[in-house]
Image (cartoon, rainbow, N blue to C red; front, side, top):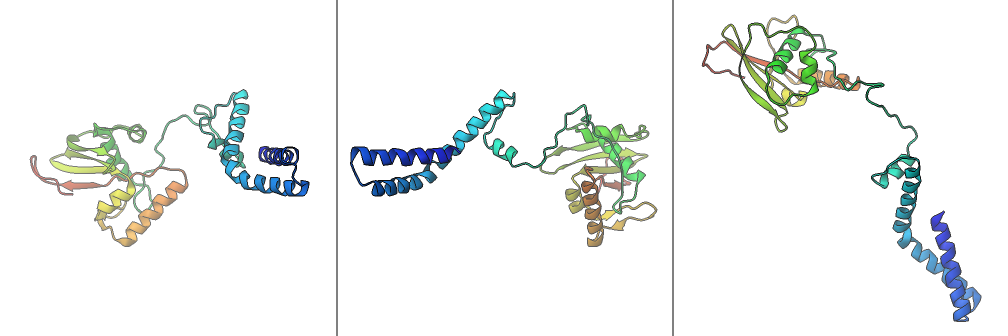
Length: 238
């Protein structure tokens, strides 16, 4: 409406100036006023949009709504449905462990044991996922000793913990599934006595399992382990 009003006022103003001050023919003056208004309207459009959004922000402020970005008014107006949530009513701002699955998607107690040891022994950056894993069940650290760790960083996107149990060392890494899959060459499956090669077919199954968990609003995390039977002071091979 503002742009229509501005165009009408501009046409009337130019028409009156041409007829009253310059005494030009009314048809010529009218056509000149219309052409000038049509030409100037696109140039004034950004200013008109800003003024309109500012007026909308003032109206929303009277309804106790603070607008930090004027463009958000347009985004809000184009919505068909707005779903909101207040923490403490529908959600509790807490993460819980729902599943621990192998690459095939089957539940695996081994995966939970590895994830628990990693989250329990790491001393670096902790997140709510670590808390959910540690609080998911009884302590599992009996007989395990921490040797060293590589803390989490946002380039590696994983944290590695070296632990020892009965002179056998185990390197447990937990992190983003896609990064872990790039590094792993073998994997465990429940009921399989030997490690299986992580070939293209296995990677495709893993990606499908992670996508399915993501579609169900779960946050997947991978926790592989590499072991070594070296005595104290030996190396741990990945």
